[in-house]
Image (tube, rainbow, N blue to C red; front, side, top):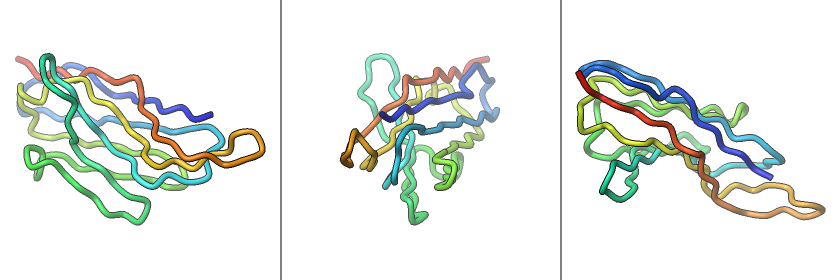
Amino acid sequence: QVQVVESGGGLVQPGGSLRLSCAASGSIWSIYVMGWYRQAPGHQRELVATATDRGATEYADFVKGRFTISRDNEKKTVDLQMSNLRPEDTAVYYCNAEKVTYKFGSSFELGDFWGQGTQVTVSS
């Protein structure tokens, strides 16, 4: 059906930068929103940034001016460039593909899909 795979996590020092990448694959017709969420230990999953297929973007207040989301509709990818990272950015980052229209058998279905997550650790 549809697979969502993230890459690019790792360990970085405070003030450093990291780029996360996400690719969706499968029998996809269209994806309305692609975005990034994160979940730190003991916390709920929270929105980081999203981008629609028309190019509209949304950012959480705590990443504005530091993170940039970019999306390629043709390649079905979305990247998150993270700069000036802080220890509180440490979390598992998840890619989400929302309102995905995909072919299932002889029909089209609509669904939301998540990646498996990638760990980002900001520490000296």
